Amino acid sequence: MEPGKLILPGESFYPLIMELFEKKEKASILYDDNGPTRAGGIIESVYEKEGKHWLRLEDQTEIRVDQLQAVNGNFSSDFSTC
Image (tube, one colour):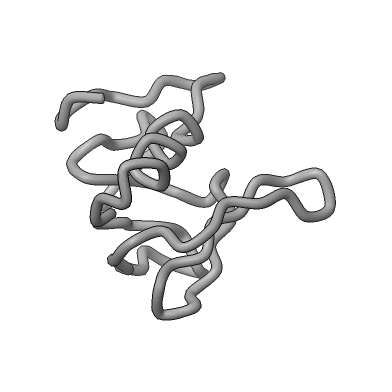
């Protein structure tokens, strides 16, 4: 996925997460954890828990995929800095 793509409602970051996981490429992530939160690193695992997709970074940070707001320059259309 090219940087700068807008993730539209109904779409997911999941394909991008899987691509980064399989290629062992670094992910720069912005996600919602009661406010915008930054994380980054190699994705160590991608798994499902309680019907939701999750990822675990090499520093053991666990993030639910549906809480992602941006990954490697690709932003959710829901994302707002205001």
